[in-house]
Length: 350
Image 1 (cartoon, rainbow, N blue to C red):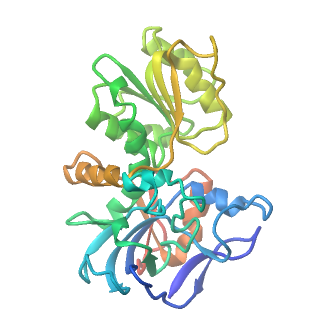
Image 2 (cartoon, rainbow, N blue to C red; image 1 turned 60 degrees about the vertical axis):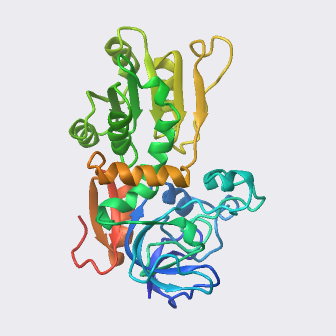
């Protein structure tokens, strides 16, 4: 089968031929129908050998997966052959207290979470072995190309927003920093779960246009004037909920500058920015948290939200052979919404 693999440090990932994997006991083999391209993969591809802390090379990329059940390992069989499914990505041990609550994204096993495409071979391939059937959710009548990004971009955004829903009531202001793959979904989720006025911030005008299209009340350019403009929009009170999908030093500083008393700041992006917390560093009662992915039950809720028609993903489609082009466009900031790899797709790029 064909797979998009990172094979050598400081080299480009490439499409290669590898054997079709066989599912072991309790496992399931999927024929991949769609795989999402995520910005966090760029951190894997740019890591030096000394800094690399992910799965062993070679590594097939892709941690957002949709597919069809093709084969069962011994003991598996809950989902019949031919069932269309989405894959819950943060694979935990399944036994610790957090995993028992469905919070596998916060697995406490010493081995940690082992997502496909990060710790083990992933979904930008023709087939994927899923470690356990509990990590599958029926796709139903949803389009896999539209739905695959729900497994990370949608799930991570939903988890972050659900934890801050008490700050999203009528008369409040919610700021989404970064209107890309996660951010454009976050705007829709805030609309679905709360009554806040939504302000989107991005450095690219096309992403601000996307933010307006999916429901942002205000879309402003991320520059030196952002904090002042947001504070004017909030009548000087500041924002009640801030979701930073970039996480750089610049964006977390902006989050602190626009926070209201009792604000909830959620840092989702992996840009390595740090926000000082202490007496008079931030408005009183400001809460700052970082999040990772979401729970299994969160994903069921995200899928229900999409099925209701209140959550749609802006996608551009690439063939498996053109996966490199998708990552190049992502690195240049040219992807609107989510790039999706579709094995067998026969057009050239978006």
